[in-house]
Image 1 (cartoon, rainbow, N blue to C red):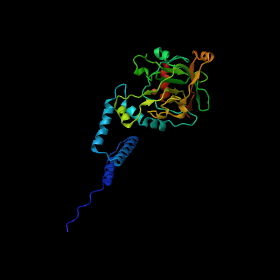
Image 2: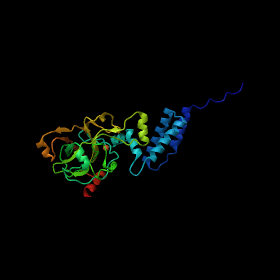
Image 3: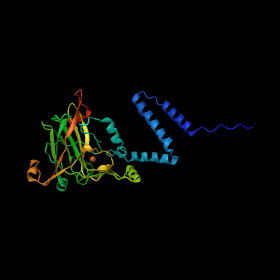
Image 4: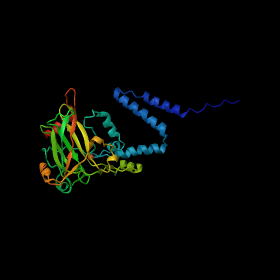
Length: 314
Ligand SMILES: [Fe+2]
């Protein structure tokens, strides 16, 4: 009786062997690099085991990454956009900036930060048509520690889109630095500036990430917001957003950056005396947002706080 050929090795065992062999080749001297690569290899092999992609599907995935790379320029990072749209930027933010409940939550920086012009407290940060068209708004608040003690001399770096959802860096018609400001808090920790209500806006959709959103049946919109980066000596800086309550995209932010504590309702005020307080004309919007920073136990600064100080000096 002829001998039966051995049964073909189970694919699962072969997949195990492959993963084990690849992991055995990770010999990085840097232990953190080794940990990261081992985890990436383990998760990606598990992905293949679960999804069982065809070769065509695998090559299509690689081609998507190639196109994502080709879409990057000196001023556009399609990979960051991809990370944002998959909620990964927010996840990385979350694991790096957990804080006490009293602290202002962080949120992703986004791609539109650039050095802001230092401006005095109370400055109009919208110029030209943006100021003429937009709904005037007094934005104000206090920067304190988590116990409510005011932080004088804190830097408040602000950037926002206009009433059409465009940043100055996207819009040649806007002067550089429009709708941006670098402010320094007063003795009582207060800050304020005059601006216009920002609009919700779409993320760039003319690249492969836009194609992905379309294929997934997702919209590209981000709810209206103002970005803030606040830093004070001896405290952990915070980079965050303040979202405008009532925006139709609050529950479906394409970048998954909304947190309840960051949603503010602008109060419509039609009182000339109240407007005079902010050097505005009625009607206007009163937009109040306090920032609470976490004190560092050792009172040391970090690189972000130093950056804020350097920007003030410019
Ligand atoms: Fe933004």
